[in-house]
Length: 287
Image (cartoon, rainbow, N blue to C red; front, side):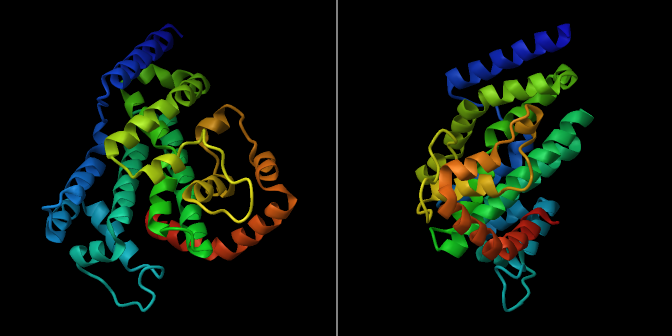
């Protein structure tokens, strides 16, 4: 385990240095996400400028067209075949989600370690699970913008995703995935805050994905914080890092947060939002 100890100390030192300098060194897997952010945020960018970036990435182009033609966003089934028209239909928040989806898929496929690829795949499945429930809850409860809820749901685990991508530079960490999970859980929140700051996401999204903020304590949920918190409880796929550490407390959290009456209302919401959740999950993940 000498190599593991040496590399995990080096990883911690590198992360600490990045946080102190306030300048994250993003892994290449984030390149597409950052390019989309840059062009979408530029007030001088036209729709065609954004479309050019998207068209350069075939997988992202396919996801954008699939989303634009999904039943959720195209109920009258007027097929969109132009990338620019598809971007116009889905909006910038959803485009960012899909760029992130491509990054997650790349990480899961290309990580040099088979064990880490498995964790990456599980992390993406959990993230899109949370995000799809957040979208569905926002729609069914008419609380805020569902696209914003989708993006916020995806960002819940952005710190873990960043650390997992950077771990490719430290191959010995795959020798003890439980201890690596402990490391990720330790650094998750400070890295997540730094990534969200670098992405310049709105304050309501930053607050909603802060897992140190108390979630819904009464029914019905009223804020984006509440929506995202409930989505993490609704997720059917486990967080792979929490799972490695044996953290399985969803039922206890549900009962403690909502109470008996709230739990009944929550179960009814799950049933009502299930179809919408399945539709957005399929459109975003390509499943």
